[in-house]
Amino acid sequence: MKKFVNDPKNYVAEMLEGVALANPGALRYVPAYNLIMRADAPYADKVSIVQGSGSGHEPAHVMAVGKGMLDAACPGDVFAAPPMDYVYETAKLLNSPKGVLLLVNNYTGDRMAFDMGKEMAEADGVRCEILTINDDVAVQDSLYTVGRRGVAGNFFVIKAVGAASEQGADLDELLRIGRKVNDVTRTMGVALTACTPPAKGSPLFELGPDEMEFGVGIHGEPGRERRAMKAADEIVDDLLDAVVPDLPYESGDRVALMINGLGGTPVSELYILYRRAHQKLAERGITVGRSYVNEYCTSLDMAGASLTLVRLDDEIETLLTAPAEAAIRVF
Image 1 (cartoon, rainbow, N blue to C red):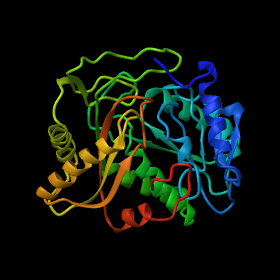
Image 2: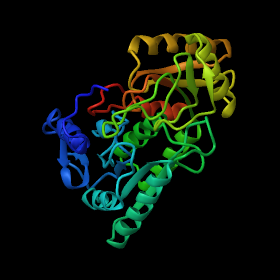
Image 3: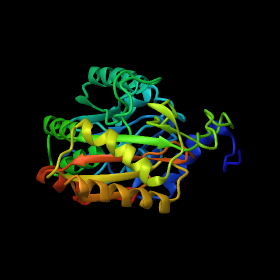
């Protein structure tokens, strides 16, 4: 497998250095903790918002650092949770009089790292709270987690709490907002190919030429089932049939619709999927109020996509439309 890689051991460090160099004056890179942070953070008058998780999902989460979004991200290695001391040191560096909110996608390794990092930071006098994200409807338990996984819907939580933090909301209010957004967000993904981690050099799993993994996880975890390949419209119909009833979303709802690429899918194909999703939601009486078509949470070079719905109300929509500045300029 051909990749633009030097030494695979330096893959994450070189990527993070590149992100910082591409955003001079806006972002600061702290190599000791795989940390990308706003250059002017922390702020005395706002809660600091921090995310972690493994690398390999870019632009999640290091490219979502900026005004109105994250104040910092401390990823681990590819598909690996950050060490607890990364979380601990990040919380200390981002310590604000108003506290630190730690966003955690629901994976066992991430939760352990953030729980322990939080305890250590609190022992040093840092006020921290954890908000867990679990928007994936595909499976209840997986190889990586107990309960539902946190996937692309995470970006709506980042955007909402990031905007509210800029407006001066306190830690308790941010927890309320984050939980509210998470509670009305649902996602389902499908893979057409596996992904290839740089250190492994070969695909994580095998899919036949006429197969797809329905409900795949962003680390390549198995989904609901291995299925025969279908036309794009049929795939979208199946995704909607899984996502819409889960909340459920109902006629009269206004939603945000995200079609997220998993790393190896042309944006033209994402718009083909979006077209069908928009049409079928309209048939159900569901109005698409905000649209997101791009790569938000990938799985390295996996060909595939996920579909996310967020039920909107005035509060959520106002936060999603608030100004934001980050390396990912798709909000």
